[in-house]
Amino acid sequence: MPDLKTKLRHLLERVGPENIWRPIVDKDGSLLVDGHEDMRDGSPDDLARVDFSGKHVLDLGCNYGYYSFLVKRLGAESVVGVDIDAEAIAGCRLLADLYGFTNVEFLISDIINIPLATKFDCAMLVNFIGKRSVCKGIVPILETLRRHSQGEILLTTRIKYNISHNLEASPKQLCEIYGEKYIRAGNLYLVEFIQDFFQDTMVMSFISPDYQDKTLKRTLLFTPSSGSSY
Image 1: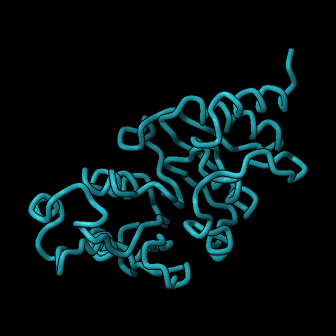
Image 2: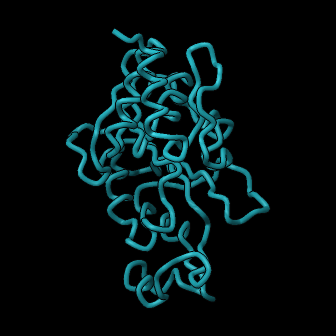
């Protein structure tokens, strides 16, 4: 029978680096795959500012579990990672065994219809909201985060999108999804929409730098407001 490292190596070769978002490392920290996404989107330094100690965390769109394992190392009591890609989840499970982590589980599911009734101390969605999901409408995604969090929500997104340059949708179509308030001067102000979506029960803060490159996603942390029902 192949050992864990051999199984993992074969899986990673099969899926190819183009399907792996974040670095994957061996148990000793040696790099196995680079990952192709900009690490300023959901920077580990930014997430290290959040207190995960003893918390139960849901990681939506987990890919190969980079953030699931990161928050576990940052002190999370338990983590559930969710992704629709069965190969990614198989890789997560191999990595969890390789690292020797307990209380880290991975589930194959789309993130809108997760077969879980559980609420978590923190629900995360890192490096998921992008051009395609913005054009479809992100309300179902935000509702999933709210439904499964009894405490914090952490997500990454651009501040705004220039509609003609960045999105394959017209201002009228986006206005029907998000409302006139968020469409101004040819831009969709997405963070404003997200902040207003959660405003009844949560307070938003930025935990990432204000990058000079405004196309980079910022990391947002939502915490329960005083008097909320959480």
